[in-house]
Image (cartoon, rainbow, N blue to C red):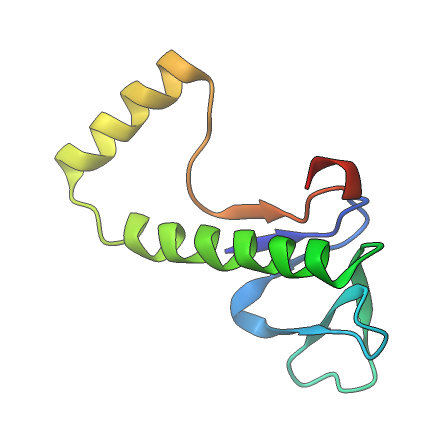
Length: 102
């Protein structure tokens, strides 16, 4: 699964990263595994509550993504039909929401 920063500047594979709440508890940070000195701020929020909401959404999308990978061919065709009808895209990408979207 790909995770994209709030401002769109960073795009990393979740499976190769550590996602954590910054020490000031208003930032979501990401560090690629194996690069301990690399630290990217993926999102900033004015309150701990908004930060927790963003992390909750992130966890929910990850669960959907994992279930999506287990679908059989018929289920995937059904998803394609829903995507065409609604314009929504499923699976594989999560962009941290902007402050005003929470």
